[in-house]
Length: 166
Image (cartoon, rainbow, N blue to C red; front, side, top):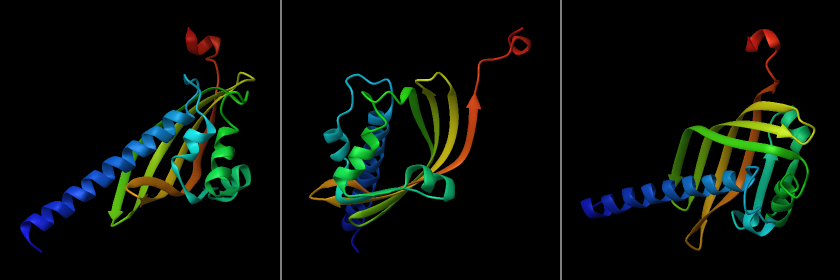
């Protein structure tokens, strides 16, 4: 392989990683609450391939979220948790420990996600989750093709007691 071809290949990988990273940032932004303007189901659907799969991995996560197939079903499932649904008063996502591997027109990414959620009822929780996601480049656009989420940690968050705040 020539030096120029090698540089082009390396540049293509870096650009793909960057597009995957921006795609994930967009997904998380659409899932954060509050968000203005509200995320639409169409905006969510635009992030997924036609044959996308979104699934919970591990017994508890699979029971909680199940598996959803197809762009429309995935977008409808995710949107059901977002306003105007009264599910979350606050929902923030933080990604870390990123690993993205690009191979041609496909990529696989893994992140640890910390999620802070406050529900309409007023209680709050902290989650630690592993995301394992496949991506495909279709007609020049990187899309999510298989989204796997596995909850690793869940802890209720409460107001500090009088002793803690003294």
